[in-house]
Image (cartoon, rainbow, N blue to C red; front, top):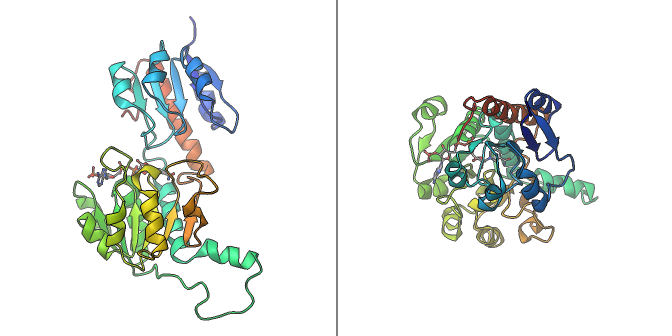
Length: 319
Ligand code: NAP
């Protein structure tokens, strides 16, 4: 019998590819750059399954080209790159990779929070540029982390994992969600707050919602104006949740103290983007879940979802 065809849009862990090969013919796009859109549209025509990254847009145009596609297995927990309704209309499964990246992303979020509050990248540039000619009491003075108030917007899996870390740093934790998280409250002492109260009271504001119609540009001019001049804003969600022009103005006008950004509206962020010209911005190239172990687990889970569907079963992490 003819084997089904799987397209994998980037080089991922060998183990995941081996797993896919047990049930399918597998084609892997091995280059570092994303697969060109035209080629993806062409290849999806023959694919029974695709293992995708956040760099691939799965929309009407692509799905209308697919003749036998049964599953889109996204190697990310976020799925704002996928038109879920369009997939559902065609009975195509969509899966993501929750849980396996939670702790690694929480580590990165907390590392970015500390790096921004304590000016680590700026201090490192200062030293490397040969500017460290004398010590002074105000040299690279940052903001306290221990004992500060952390406001988490989007207290989900990753938000709760960050809250557990913050508890170890003696932080007071506020969160803003649409629903109440009683277990997280009991575990970390976190308190639910309105968005405005959270922004007014927090020393660190961490954005961790998914990107949806509701959260698009959630942080804009008014929201930044509610923050304190000593507060630090951290975004590890998606670039689309933040009005970047408003963030830039808030930083330049010193309405807020600094920002740590793992995600941008346009990725890779252009080198001439105003935000990355500011000394009080710590910018990272979307590396929230980027550890060798976690990327391996994400690939294995995405592959397992495909194998399940190709064998006529329900995938493990269906959306
Ligand atoms: P999750 O468990 O679904 O948590 C998301 C939380 O956001 C939920 O608790 C949800 O609570 C809250 N939320 C959703 N819409 C909201 C709204 N309109 N206002 C306020 N809160 C809202 O997801 P997760 O696994 O923690 O991942 C969160 C996001 O992080 C992902 O969607 C992804 O975009 C991003 N992420 C980024 C990286 C990276 O590399 N930077 C890595 C992993 C994940 P309610 O439903 O109660 O509102």
